[in-house]
Length: 588
Image 1 (cartoon, rainbow, N blue to C red):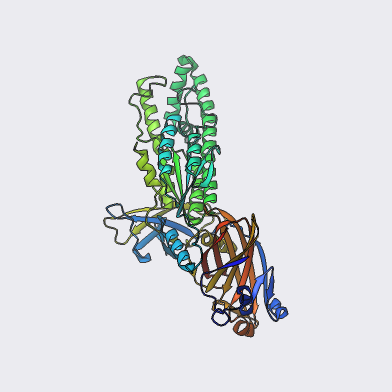
Image 2: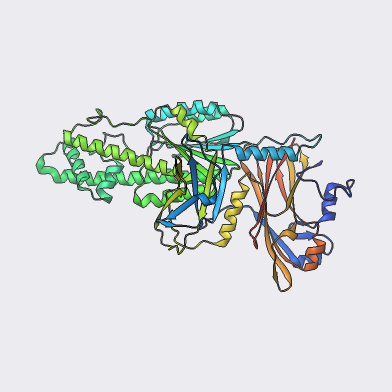
C-alpha cells in the first residue's frame, strides 16, 4: 500500500485530481533519483544536470565567531525584543561589526511551533494525527570522576525526583565522565531511575584527601610545578615533614617527596580534566544529532582547567555554540565552605600550615567552579551553586531562557596563531539589565574551508525545527509497507529552481544544489539521512520551459514500521540560500 502526506497542495491537483499522485509528480517536473533525470529529453538534461548522493555526514568548522547572549531585566526575565543595533561587541577592546544576528526561542517554543505547523499541514479529513514531537532534549552529565560519594548520593536523589516529574514531551539521557552507567535519550522513567541509582564515584587512581603523604592535590601541584610558587612548595614540604616523621636535617627528603607527589597529582589531575572535557565534547556531538531544543546539564563539583587546558574548554564551547547546544551546570557540593581550623579527618601540622592549606582549598574551590560558570555563560545556560536546595537547582538548570541572542562577527586581520581573544558585549542602553555572554575564543591556527561553512549551515538546519523559505520548496512523503516489520519511505522535494540566483557562464545557468533528507524517531533520535548534490548547467530554454513546474528530488529509506519525523533542507551554492521543512510519517 502506498500512502502519501502533502504539506502543501500539489500544483497539478486541480487539473488532474484523478491521476495517481506518483504519476502527477512525473508529469509536472523532472525527478532526480540515483543520479538521473527522469523526464522527456533525458539525454539533453543529463548534460545540463548531474547529481550524486552520499550518506549524510555532519562535520565542520568555520572562522565566524558566534557569541550567544542572554539579556535579563531587573526581575531576571529574559528580554527578547532587542535589535542588532542595540548591541556592541568588542574583541580585545576593539569594536566589531556584527554580521550575524538572530533572536532564538528556547523553552520548547520552537518545537511547539513546529508541532502546530505539522498539525495544520496534516489536518486533512481521515488522516491520522502526526506523531507528537518531543519539545526538548536534556543530557544529564554526571561527573562521577570528580564527585565524592556524599555529594553524588545527594545529587542523584534530587535528580531522581526531578526526572520523575518530567512531562511527556521531554526526553532525557544520562551520561557519566567515566563512561559507566549511561542511558541514551528516553521517556522511560523506570530506566532513568535505575540508571541514576547505579551511579557511583569512579576517580582515576586518586586517594581521598588526607590519605596520601604528603597531601598534594591538583591545585597545589599546579602551583608547585607549573607556576613555581615557593609558598605552596613550602607548605607541602611542612606537611611532608610531619606525615613522614622527618627531622629538620632531613628536609631534602621531604622536598623530594613533595616533587614526586606533585608530579603524580598533576598527571592524574590533567588526565581527569581532559577526560571530563572529552566526554563533554562527545555529549555535545551526540546532542548535535537531536532536533529542536538541546541542553546539557553538567552535574559536578567542578574541576581545574590550568592554562594549557583552556583551549580544550574553548573548543567545547565553540562546538556547543555551533551545534545550538546550551550547557548548564550544577555544583553538586551545594553550600560549600572550608572548615575553620582545617578538616578534622586530616593531619594537623601547625596553625600556620593549616591556615595556608585552608586558603589553598578555598582558592581551588573557586577555580574549580570557574569552568562550569564559563561553560554556562558562553552557551546561554545557567550555573547553580552555593545552595543546598538541589531540587530548585535542577529546575533552574534544566530550563532554558525564553529568549537569547546569537551575535556573529568575522574578526578583521585575524592572525592564525591560536591566541586568546577576550570578548565583551554591551548594550547601548543597558540600564537595569544584566548580560550573560561568551567571554572569549581562541584564534584558529589555519584558515577555514568554504565547503566546511556550507556543511556547518546545513547541519544546523537539519537538527533545528525552524522552517526556512529562502528557496520555494514543497515537501511530500509516501511509504510502502513491504511486510509486518519492514517499510520503504520516499521523501520528495519539489524545488522551484527558477527562483535560484544562477550565474551565467558560457551561455549556461550555473548553480549547485544540496538536498538533505533526514529521519528522526519518536524520541528525536537521528535514524538516517541522505545527501544529494545536483550540479546544474542549464540552458535558458530548459530553465524557462522544461523546469517551469519545478525540479523534484527523491530520497528513499528502508525502515521499520513506526512514527518518524522528516526534516528536509535545501541549500544552493551560488546565493547560499536555504529552505527547511518539517514532515512526518506514521507507519502502522
